[in-house]
Length: 345
Image: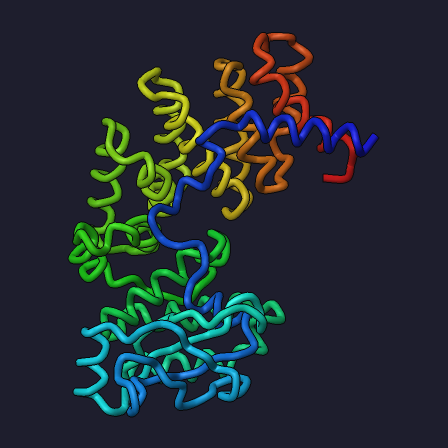
């Protein structure tokens, strides 16, 4: 029986389409500097070699040894000039693939960045054993750091946090700083996490940006930012915000990708909000799928991804009514309901 459920899920997810990808991330690499530090067993600092300033030479090991620190990367002219002007600065390298791959360059370290890396290495054992909250709180505390490089590092780390953890962090977003940097070309990749942080702000300017940003996205702006703006709207406005999103689901103005992104934002709050929010979202989405059965696959997908079976009763009722005509919709809905009924989600 479980093999049947697994097959149904595999087929359903295979039909998910582009909207099944995470809507809240954009041009940033999947693995961060910190990810690589946590994955490796050999971390070294390097400078340009005295004998050959075009080659890197490891000068200090933060983890592992220097003996096998063969650094093939050439020192580019900009780095060479910076290192020459700043004798205390170094370049951070770590061995890829645990402890067996080649060394890769991770970051240029001035004194401020070096202090952050030293703190990370001191907490590495705690973080790799699963204390994700400590990791994310550490970087939340760096959001207002005077160094733009470290602020970017902090944003990149928080971009990895599940939304429930992001909500649980002790932070007061600096909405003025967020809005100041939001549209800088070199900061485009950080827009989604900045928008989510605006959702945590009580500043009227943050509320205005979320409202206007959601309107822009719904008028045909970036679908990448639609998810964060929708999520931030519910964070700021609570039940009323969820209701506003539900109205847009049913007004006929959105394409399938936009619809699923809105459903995703509501599913996130169903799983992370209080009991009143969860019940409200379930009711709103139940009304939505009953009046628009051709969208039930979106709801099934977004709740299945989160192992949340709060929509099982509504989708089962829809199946029993026989109003779903498309196999594209029927398969993920059937897979979701079957998994919920199995008792082994």
